[in-house]
Image (cartoon, rainbow, N blue to C red; front, side, top):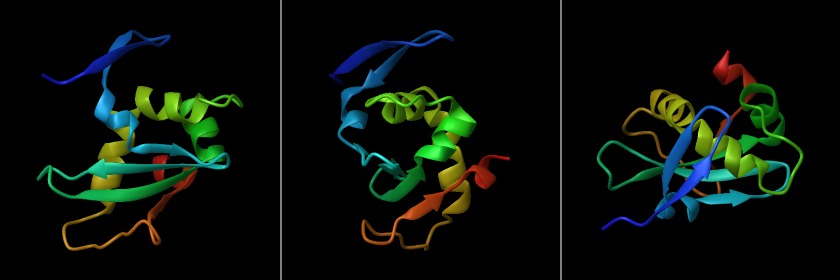
Length: 105
C-alpha cells in the first residue's frame, strides 16, 4: 500500500505520494527534485530556481512554498523535464538539469 497525504490547493484537493516528498529539497533559492523517468527505474535530477517557481507557478516567499508549488504543478513540471531529457542524456546530482522560466513559456 502506498502512503499518501492530502494537500489542499486553491484548485482542488490532491493526494500526494509520501515518497515524492523525500525527492524534494528546498535549498532556499532553488528547489532540487528527482523526476522519475517512464521506466520507473531511473530519475533525472533537476534544479528549479525560486524565481521560476514564483513567476510560473505562484510560489510565495515562505519556507515550504517551493515544494508546495512543485507538488501542485508537478505534472506540468515533470512533463517538461521528460521532454527536455531524452533517453541517453545523463544528469547527476552534481550536474542536474536546470529549469528556468523560459522553459515554461
